[in-house]
Length: 323
Image (tube, rainbow, N blue to C red; front, side):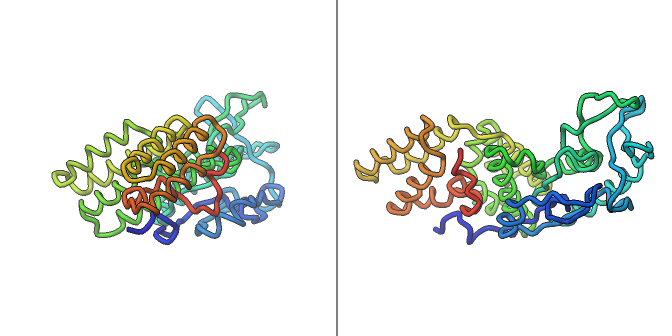
C-alpha cells in the first residue's frame, strides 16, 4: 500500500481576495501581496480570485468604505460622502457566490478587516462615527453563510501557526473529499476513504469521529445523496476543531500500539521517548510523526502508512514544524 502522500493528492482550488495575490485593486491603488500564499501555496493550489469592491464598479483608487449600523441593519457606505453601496454589494455577492459554488473550491482566504471581504472583526460604526462591536464584511459574511462546509480564513489569522496548520489541513481534506464525491463512488469507496481519515478525525473531534464511524457502518442502508450530505457536514465540522498536544498525543499512542508487538525493544523505546518529548513540548508534532512513519515503513504497517494524519498536506508547507 502506498503512503498517503503528495503523489495521491487531488488538485486544490483556493478562492482568494485579489489584493493578496499582488493585484493593485485596493481603495488606495495598492495591493496586500501575501508571500506565503503567492510563493509557496501556489505550488500546490490553483487560485480563483476576486475583488468585490472593484467588481461592483468602484474605481481604483476610490473613496474607502466602512460598515455603518442603522436601525434596519448594517450598511456599506463611503467613509466621507456617505454613498450607500450595500445593495450593489449584496447583489454582486449573491451572484458571485453562486458562481463560486460551481468552481469546485476547496477553501477561501479573505482579506482581513475589509468591509467587503472581512470574515470577522470588521470595524462597524454608528452614523455619527462612534465605534460599535465588529461584524463580518458583506461579501465575507455572505460567503461563510452560503458555503458552511468550505474552509474559510482571513490572511491575518493565518499568521497564527495553529490556525494556519488547521486551515490547510481542512483545505486538502476538502479536496480529497471532493474528489471522492465527484466520482461514481460506492459505499466501499466511502469505507476506504474513511479508513484513511480515521486518525486525523480522532485528533480533532472524538465525538464526530464516532458519529462518522457509525454513519459509514450503516452506509449500505442509507440514501446515497443524504449519506454524502451528512458525511460531508460531519467530516468538515470535525476538522474545524483545533487539535491539541493532548489529542495528538493520544493518537500517537494509538499509532504506536500497531508497532508494539512487531518492533524491536530499541525501536519501541525510541518511539516512547520521542512521544514523551512531544507531550512535554520539547519537539513539534512533525518529529514523532516522522519516527512513526519510519518504523511503519520498516515493519510494513500498511494501516499506518495509509493514514492522512501522518501527512495531511504537502511537507513543503512546513506546517507541523511549529506545533
